[in-house]
Length: 297
Image: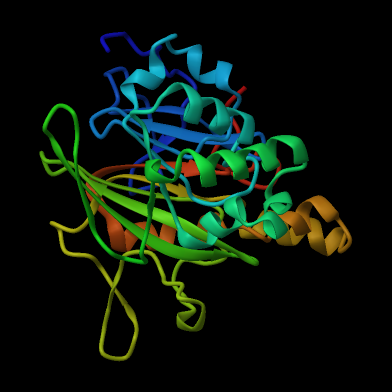
């Protein structure tokens, strides 16, 4: 479909040197948002929507034909700010051309009656989704394997390579994604992380893409491996959060942010993995405890 995406004038985009960038040119993605209220980003060249955390009408603000431009929806995990169940149900019924990428643990939550209720407070919609997926829409889903490369061909005949990384988010198995387009654009999307540099082989969970030396120390990716665009969680500034908790150790809001990763950990990872001319878009950035989106209204 041919339509013009609205200008994104409230985006916070950074380079590798912590400098905020202003973009006037057309970006290769449309950023719907990233917060506890909803998460979603559309990659234009790849025809991929990552996460589905908003209501159906939020997407139609772009164009009433928006979902005809989406060929794949990549889901990270089952929390409702990343998966809006009524929106998913509607898309399954209305857009049979869309394929869904999902990790096997999330698949169990969606299709197992004893687990379905865990990811949505709306029991009626959750139960309906379970029945619809099992009885009608199983063929629409691609169940991922950890770090197994998936090669897809778009309607336009362009080739896209997708690689999932199963990472942990408390007791939830989450999925980070890397995408490489046929013109060499490399993208990483990873949100709701407990950590970046550790892995848990016992739970089949891994770290994000990185090279490691003989002693297990992090090593930079090669120039060809580094990412041009990184959507990565950077929730809070460690010094700000520690100061708040020192004053009020029982501050539930501040303690809740510790479920995510700090700006400091994110910047460290960026030094190993972001291309020198690459851009970084922080996810789940806290206005109260962080520094990356303070000037946005």
